[in-house]
Image (spheres, helix red, strand yellow):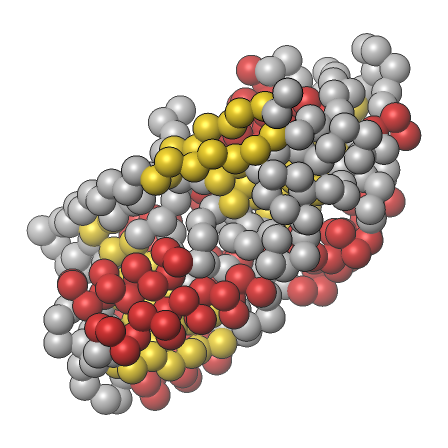
Length: 329
């Protein structure tokens, strides 16, 4: 599996911070893993992510049905579903839970401070209060950051490069999560320097997206930025279609939007995070207590653009981040 290094890998909590003994199984027994996914069950990107997790777990010696049971729920970016499935998974008392995204991690931590949690694509776990620090998360959660908020400003700069005539941009965000607020703030801070007026479009349902973009596109010199959220991912086909209909040059946070026909993206390969998260799941299943680890990040940005000769024009500009872990001895 090809993996793009664009992540910040968080170390585990200090030794003894997680009550693993309460969940440890006897050698040879069946272990249990809970997984709460953000998109709908038949989402191709979601299936690719869960496949990466299962593939890596199998490489590490965990085969579903033989020595591990994996209980997966798909929330379809619905808050009611998230709350219900969080309660279901916690009630199963698994050895570890994989929480995907801020909208899922927050209620998961409210539901349990005992079950170990590995999270993926959460941009600011410290600011959101999910962990104490990147070096020493504390509590029962650790995992992987998909990007820092600063990259959100790059989306606006990229939009201006692609369409120099753009003077106003709609920013699709999920204002109900801290990540939506943080990404919006980073974009706002860059807007004056590139001469673009930005307006938030809060994502709640398809109808709201359609109405907001239709109204926004009435003025000329308009563009679109789509920030990272489970809601945006669920509605990506609609968003890409509307951008094409209203001729809005757009920059997306994930390459899956480009796969769906969008113009350009700048961001991480999220499938890679699931592959890596399997390593943390493996450690917990084997009874290992998280050791103190510091995250050393060496930024190695790399831009790459691809386009097709047929409309809609597509380009992808992935940014790579290489992070290495150094155990604290």
